[in-house]
Every structure is written in C-alpha cells, then in structure tokens.
Amino acid sequence: MKKIITGILVAAFCAGAFARTFTAADVNDCLNNFSININKTLPNAASQQNVSAQAWIGKIYPSAPPHFAVGIEAGVSKLDMEPFKEAIEVFNVGGLPSFFVYPTVTANARIGGFFLPFDIGFSCMYMDISSLRAVSDGFGISFFNIGGDIRYALLKGEGAWPQLSLGFGYYYLGGKVSLNKDGVRAGLDYSTHAMFGQIQVSKTFLFFTPFLGFRGIFSKSATDWYWSVTDDRIATAASYVGTASSGKGSANSNWTDYFVPQIYSGFGLKFSFFAINISGSYDFAHTIWGGNLSLRFQM
Image 1 (tube, rainbow, N blue to C red):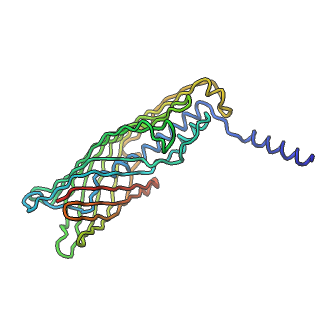
Image 2 (image 1 turned 120 degrees about the horizontal axis):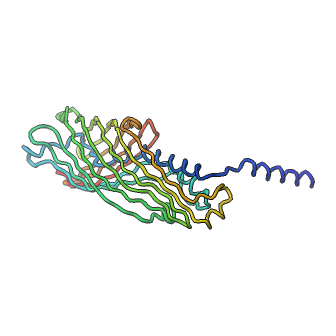
C-alpha cells in the first residue's frame, strides 16, 4: 500500500512539474504562429481557382464554334490549426481540429484567344459563414477571392501531340478566421496577393483529358490576429498564469518569404457542352495538399 501511495504521489508531482503553463505572451506566440501557417496556406488556396484540364481551350475567333467556358468550382487546401487550437485550449474551450480544410468557392470564366493560341481566365467569389458547426461551435470564416490568368499554347494538341502551355496569373484573397465561444474570442484577418507562373501538359482522348502541371507561386500577405477572454474564463483556466485578458498583433510576409513549388494533376470529363474537372496539388516546400472540383458549360 505504501508503494502504491508513493507511486501516486510521484505521478502527481511529475504531472504538476511537467504540466505546461501559459502566459499572455505564450497565447500571443500561438496566434502569431497560426498567422504564419495561414500565410503559407493561402498561396496554395489561390492556385485552386479556375483550374482547367485542357492546357489550352482553343480560340474564340476565328473558330467555329467559338471556345469559351463558364462555371463554378470548389477548391480546398490544408491549413494547420494546431497553434490556434493550443491557444484556445488554454482557456478550457476545446473542440478545434488539428487541421482545417480551407475552402475556396468561385464563379469563373475562360475565353479563348483571338487569332493567337492563348486563353484568359477570370474568377471571383464572396462568402461569409459565421458558424461552421462541423468544425466547432462559434467557429466561422469569411473570404473574398478575385483574380485571373493567361495561358499561351506552345503545342496545340494537333495529331498525336499533347497540348502544352505556359501561363501567368494573379489572385487576391482576403477574409477572416474567428472563434467566439464561452467567453473566449480569437481570430485573424488576412489579405494575400499571389502571383504564379505555370507550365501544363494535357492530352484529350475522346471525352477524357488527363493533365499534369507545375506552378511556382510568390505571395505577399498581411495578417492581424487578436484574442480576448472574460475574467470568469481566466479564473477557471488552471494552466493560464497572469491577469492579462487580451492581446493582438500581426504577422506579415513579403514576396520572397514563402515561395511555393507546387505540382498539380488531374483529369477532365467532357460530355456535349458540359465539362467536369477534378485535380489535386502538393506544395513540396510546406507539405500542403490541395484539391479542386469544377463544373462548367464549355464550348
């Protein structure tokens, strides 16, 4: 019995000795790290817009029929939520996942070139989801996306040859990620400018078009984060040391801070005037995956 009691006391002492305590500075660091994570994810999210299976959709003039496409698409990118989760759990408000599938939803159009073998794409969308209960009570996101790209065909896909194009694009993403739950408020506002160059190859077999490409993405981001808690919530947080009840800060990145080398691949299916594209991407530098699904009316 003495050995059992001694073991319990030692275990309790070790648990107390090694239990992590948090100060306001630690919570600030967590949210600052989360801001860095989102600054890495957003360039990948930007690239999930207006993905086309065909490396070049054809000319709008002279062409019979003229080539263009309009539709909607949904993209996703992995966002590491661990620092945000850690900051929230200090105040006994759990329920956040370790990562979040960050969405982009856009309406888009792509128009074939005049005379020369190029095409131009454009997409935009605004969405405000104040509560995503599938993630956690009180968790919400909002975002605004806009941008476009231009691609020039080096190979047009004639005969046995594939299509091969070089492209350049720019996208802007702005929005917020927030949590308001049980006396705890935390979140961040962000804006990201992303520019990229890409090379893509594709080949159409009847109605099936597989494709493979590579993007190099540069970005510039500005992120402002904040948190606040009530005194009652501080009183119940055994791991929190101090009386500070709020904090705020920012984490910005410049064009060369987070270069994204990204490979992407997928396939398209075209039936009559309707096209479905499915693709996936991977950022080698930051181990961030992404995906895209689109439905378009396409000539």
